[in-house]
Amino acid sequence: DGYESWRHREAIELSDLVQKRLTKLQNPDNCSTARKLLCRLNKGCGYGCQLHHVVYCFIMAYATERTLILNPRLGATDNGRMGEVFQPISDTCIDSNGASHASWPGQSNTQVLTLPIIDSLNPRPPYLPLAIPADLAPRLMKLHGDPIVWWIGQFLKYLLKPTGETQQMLENGKERLGFKKPIVGVHVRRTDKVGTEAAFHSIEEYMTAVDDYYDQLELKTKVEKRRVFVASDDPKVIDETKSKYPHYEVIGDPNVAKMAAVSTRYTDSSLNGIILDIHLLSLSDHLVCTFSSQVCRVAYEIMQTMYPDASGRFRSLDDIYYYGGQNSHNREVVLPHNPTGQDEIQIRPGDLVGVAGNHWNGFSKGKNLRTNQVGLFPSFKVNDKIEVVELPTYPHVQ
Image 1: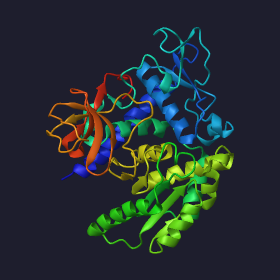
Image 2 (image 1 turned 30 degrees about the vertical axis):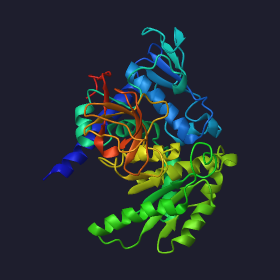
Image 3 (image 1 turned 30 degrees about the horizontal axis):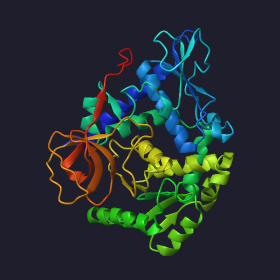
């Protein structure tokens, strides 16, 4: 019916438009007079968290029509090397010099504004995630199942353009591991979050979701070999998967896993390892991971730039998708529900429910903003409320 070819064409056109706008924003006619937004990469956290910090800064720059200046260049935790791993985010404007300086929010005529980390941002503007721009919203909502993830993915697409050397490293890694399709990407977080921010999940839980994917796929097509790419910060996970699932072709690099452990996480070779892991996870046909992990969410966001709509190509064993420091995540009730147990809350069509999480058993937890009740409700009785905000439309960019 031509729908598939329309989706591919529309996805390319929308992405090209956003990339051209970002290129224009980052390459002003005159850097010495351009309004700038200074983003300090001083957030003491891992690679995925650093990337999300930069994307937040970039969204703020887009919304305020200011050229984004990173200091130091992308990735302070990696011995200053990320600037060499990816292409510069501007060809013409990389310094933070200006006639006037202020901290956020400053004035519209302040030349250089400095941003705090998202958790300290005050006042908080409406265009923080999970909001999408009004001028793109109609097209985006028609094209994509989760527009905010597409929107975040576009900023990562611009930021993570590899240098020639990095591109070669990614291609060599792909070949060395024997990465080919069909393949499910599995990311198993073990070391620093487990026990503090996240629960332990056995490899069996991940592989049950992988089995589900292949069972579905085999209803539609013949699968010669079930293949899985395993990325982890614990090298034992790769061997465990191989021994417990001999009928699978398991690919993964135990050396990368060793380097992803917390003690060695900020070395040059571990940076290459995590970049390769995320690249291969995002190239997979389906992703099984825990959304409590930034690495897993980054891979899912980048995955949106590989397909017209990859919003359904995942299974998270814990959290629903979120963006650290986001504005509230609301869902709109479409079907009524009267509680059948003491943990449940009443909802009526039109109610807004602030979502706290999904229990993955048919129920979600949240707060009914009309009644202020907190509790469980059936997940299928609500729809995501897509937050749409007026942002600059960059009319000079076609």
